[in-house]
Image 1 (cartoon, one colour):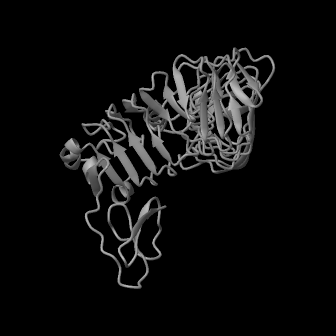
Image 2: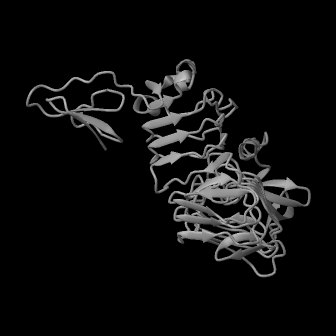
Length: 420
């Protein structure tokens, strides 16, 4: 959804503007004009003031709109003042205005379109006028310094509670600010819907408590919560469940989200799990050991992307699980390239051949049967020499090299021990 919207938004008209006055670019719209861009690499800088009206060819027009992409990539723009007559702000209108720290939205504004303020990385607060009746998809995504969103009294569609943006009836959580400093958040009992991008990103939350009313979560909803260690679900929720702070569907057939900073470096999936949702373990670099059940068949797009710390993978599935190819992942990649060299893969003895022949799983340098070992023989070091250190695949670890996970130390007299 979001990629389609981004692609559509980045298709500018053949002529970006109709005329320019005072360094501001405009398009004619019959009896009014709208602000637009002259260059997708950034048109505006400094403190920008948009006038309430402008004269062109002896005719005076009110300024009533901000076009799609109007201020995009204006990384040097620090503030903008908009006239009260502005009624809409278009798709990606302020996208990537990374220095923008101050903007007052117009009193008559009705619509904020998709991605309107994405990547406004210096914007710390914003107030939604009472007149706004539509806020598009991911309008405030990647506003990294945003600490609160306020809504003026009298708005019939939206409200804010503790700096968080909701629908007026509190059924929809629209956006949770990226730099809101609290470490724990409990979803209000009334909230039933949270769109993707609502927590993209969030830097301080360590615990999220999901209520009984939330019916589903979008793929990767909490994937960019950089400090998240626990996702807890109310036992009364009929669609979602959590085990040890990890989020699943109610029937435990799909892993939905493994928190980035989960307290455990190992994960053993329930025996009922058949699939990993898209982005479900994205960026879990602290995860060292992953054990997957015999029931697993499908691995979602980028489900294991960024799991660069894996050094042990156990898969009980008789047939190698697959990640179905799609435009985002045309080759069906499952693991990061580094994992194939550093991690061991254990699979059912009868499936060794299938895994070794598989285009994805066969890339592991060490594949052996569950409960077995990749090590056939280890030579003891010279008499009175220092202990020789091997990884679990029987490869010697050079002195001074990083030593992660379990390893075997062998002394000159042939004694060995497993250490971590």
